[in-house]
Image (cartoon, rainbow, N blue to C red):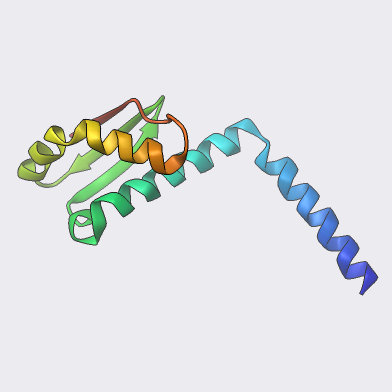
Amino acid sequence: MRKASSNMNILSSVIRKILKNPKLSSRLDDIRIIEIWDEIIGKNLQKYVTDSKVYKGKLYIKLKSSTLRNEFTYQKSDLIRQINQRFGKKVIEDIILK
């Protein structure tokens, strides 16, 4: 039992060191932002999103529907506020809809 506990401590220490890597931490933040976006828009609207990525504080969303793109344009500031609020800090400055 003692050996298993020791191995868990070592493993948790290794995981903490890996997560402190700025490149990995940034990428994990980007993934979390996209997950938050998906939660906000819901499953019904997710089917119209063909691609999404985060780059330099901007969320890029590629949509199949021009009508939905227009609607998101009107709600852009509210969407940015919701994403930043759920994330816990300001991570998105703009949403680019294509």
